Length: 457
Image (cartoon, rainbow, N blue to C red; front, side, top):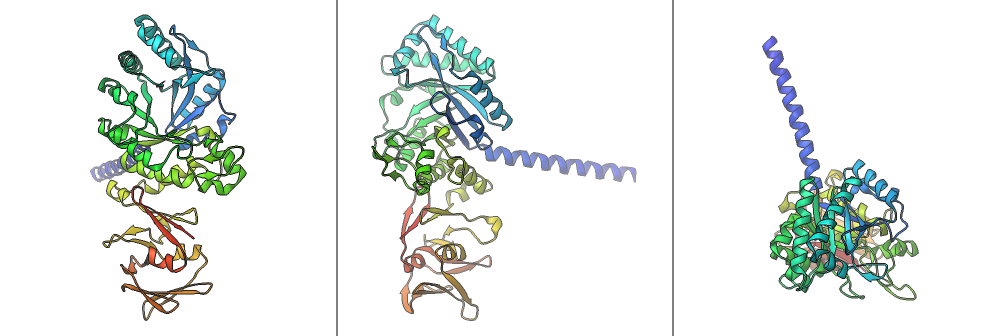
């Protein structure tokens, strides 16, 4: 009996260990996808407490400004950085300091980086000062934001990159970099083309600035794709590519949160007729598409700046977190097949746990969608003839009859041939999306790169 008792105890312990290990593995898998938020403390008035650090994996505080002699300009809000670090660490997020940036007090920082890196002495002093700053503020790493080296300074950029990375590694710290996007998978801007393998190998991951192409289209979806492809072709592992997404408009420079405050519908579009200048930006649907692309092809997304997000139902951080949660248990293959439905500008969310089914693409390469949610969303009334296996949906003067397992539907009793069939799968009825929704006057648009269906009147 004693032996049986000990065996039972051993089994229970093993089960508990396995459960804890499995839970830890699931948590780790969820956090493999990086969600990076820039927090520009000197530029915005958003309080630290409003930042959703529990939904971020990394926070990058901007900016720490170097001098040409290797010393640093102390941050204007040191207490803010300390508060942010404490909050991020409490929520399990890492916090980095961004060194550099485009300019300081209206003057480009490029010449400062060039001068400080050209001298062994000043470069060494800069690295020592950065490492001391990291220790003082209990940070997890550094982002190097030299915008940008050129053919005359790339050798000094490499020295700074390699030496700073090695110094940080000795402290168990990480280094990343802000790098340019690219307009094709093989061709990018000169600073990117010149970056050496030694530079790229020094970074824990890279934040790709896939924005600011122009005013009217400053961060299109295609630019996200080509930017990822470029760095993949440069040999950067997919998991180390974090694609940047802007939360500001051009040429107005208005913030996403302010645009939504003007009109909540601005959250779902990419243009607002603001005055005195117009606003072209990325709304929540475009940013969702980019996130899906990054989930399939890269290692994360970066928001510039996360200060510009809202803290309500229009929040971009919350949208990303929801998307990660919904897809956390999908295999890579299943994730590649994940379909998103946008109806009248809003996402139709389908959750496995609800038991109503989820959209999929069938063997005819047609999108199949669970019956009830989209039709009820547009106000249609639904009935089912179990004997004849026919679904009927009615809205206003339109009646659509959908026979199961037949390549036809009836629109106001007129037969319409379809290129796929409605089916019953797992006790749920799935309808051919395009045929049925077009019968109710909706246009359908398919974005293959993100597997997104957009339905609009």
